[in-house]
Length: 45
Image (cartoon, rainbow, N blue to C red; front, side, top):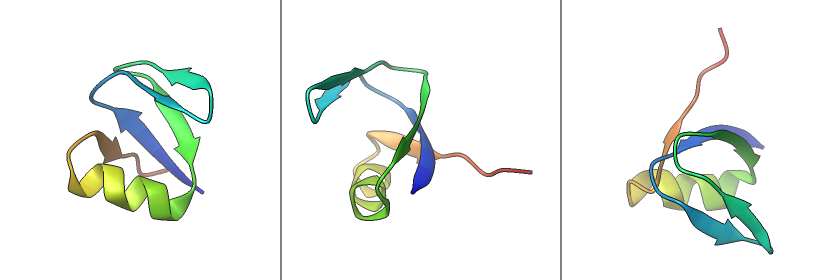
């Protein structure tokens, strides 16, 4: 699982993911979203 910050609002598995919020998403989906600029990765420091 990867934490991402959403750049757009979208629905995923019946859940509404809001723009600007941080969510934990499956790695394969997160990589696709990051590549298409739907989301940006969040690094834990």
